[in-house]
Amino acid sequence: MREAMRGADVVVAVTAAREPIVEAAWLEAGMHLCAVGSSARDMRELDAESVARSRVFVDSRAAALLEAGDLLLAQAEGRIGSDHVVAELGEVAGGAPGRRAAGEITLFKSLGLAVEDVVSARLAFERARELGLGTSVRL
Image (cartoon, rainbow, N blue to C red; front, side, top):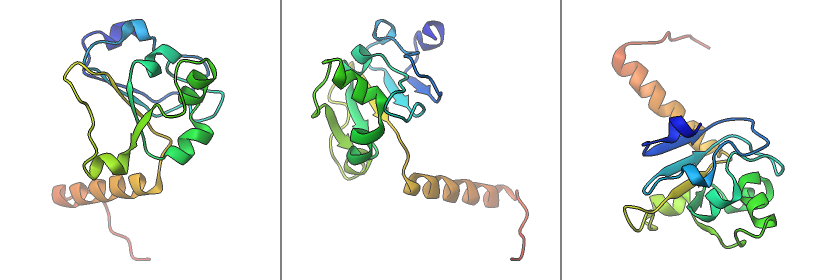
């Protein structure tokens, strides 16, 4: 994983890891992390120091406080407080500040929201229609 992260602007982890696969020592200034997998209280993709060094955004604070092992385990280890999450995705879309400086490390911990799936499906549908792909069926 260290080699894959070297020089990357964006690192996306979508795994079922129970132990960290991303270590803080591998983070670089300005890197953005997306932690999409490991969505249970006892699972994590990031070590606690990676979370502590990041400006953290989530899709839902309520869900993150219940299920995001990356955050809950970092908190249990005393590396972050319960207030470490800066904003929800919707707040950022509404104008809440994201990265404050070019070198800041940011993290989006996603547990998933139905609206994310609907928007993704709509974009895929529109693109397929533009390209003349797909098959229409009558239901």
